[in-house]
Length: 297
Image (cartoon, rainbow, N blue to C red; front, side, top):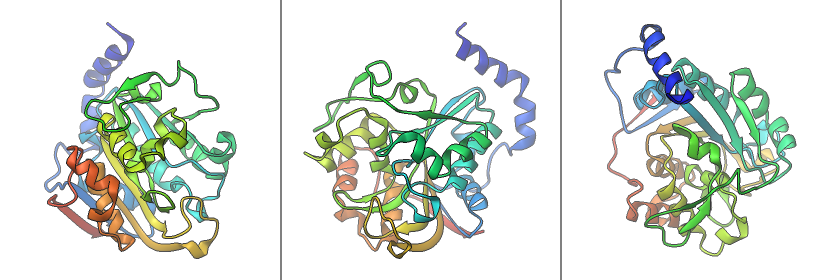
């Protein structure tokens, strides 16, 4: 028996009853998308995830989980160029409550990874909850194997971080920002950070590339940090004047739905955002017609 399979079997038997004490067996009301509003971001994150079925719907005992925030820029949490560290910490904590065996946190940063992970507060947040931050200092064939995406229109072949390929669960934890090229960067655009591609290649057909990577690699759960969105000058920002506070966390099992709702906070019609409409055509998800609930916490 492989070590990973052994761990799953051990968790499933030895810790099953402990898990039942921590979590309800089922939640009475679950939705395709949940929105929680409040200044306690830890609670808002937990309640948004509960609205879409709770963490045990996505993470099973023994699972290896990758949590993928935005950690692209050497910028402090208050400027919102990166995902809020409280939200990252809470998602990691939930994964371990669901008896995940390992949780990795990483992004392929634009700036120096050691600096971005530290300045953003995400390295400390991830480690405090028990996760291992992964620093991508160099793109290699071993770390980024080549993959083929069936049905892709532009990104037919790409390279994907092996920790994504070898994990059981991918939890996409983006921050909602404006973007000079894509219009917005939320969950779908966040997956650019799982590839080893030369970034300029994507900009030849950016909207096709974004929709293609989400066709090839599916986020099992998307948790959007829309607490204080960067409504202009994204993705780097640099000033509190570029931000609008919404104190909102959005969770969904479908990244297209999550991005569509987050786009509304910017006053955008999701049907006018290229990668969202392309993703819907490719069967990645729906722009509308999903069940949702919004609560205050």
